[in-house]
Amino acid sequence: MRKARIYQRGAPATQSGKARADSWILEPEPVEKKRPDPLMGWVGSGDTETQLRLVFPSLETALAYAAREGFEPEVEQAPAKRLILQSYADNFR
Image 1 (cartoon, rainbow, N blue to C red):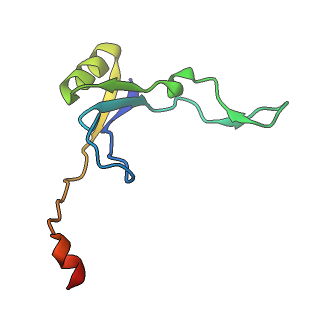
Image 2: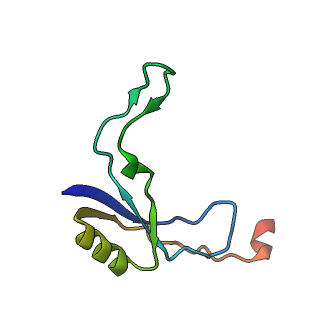
């Protein structure tokens, strides 16, 4: 069975919006190592599934897809979000 990594998209540091923050991403692990091309010297491999990146609306649908396609899922939970509440007046203390 091929391994696949399932993780939740992190929020970008430059934006405060929460669009697509609940989506889950499935990325297959590479099967073969990358090697330099003898002609050009660029690094690559023959494994085209490493270019695959699937987005799912929930963890359950990502796990169902992985089971149906024969992937062994490895789920990475997102860290708990901490909300630091402070007022504007705290800047002047």
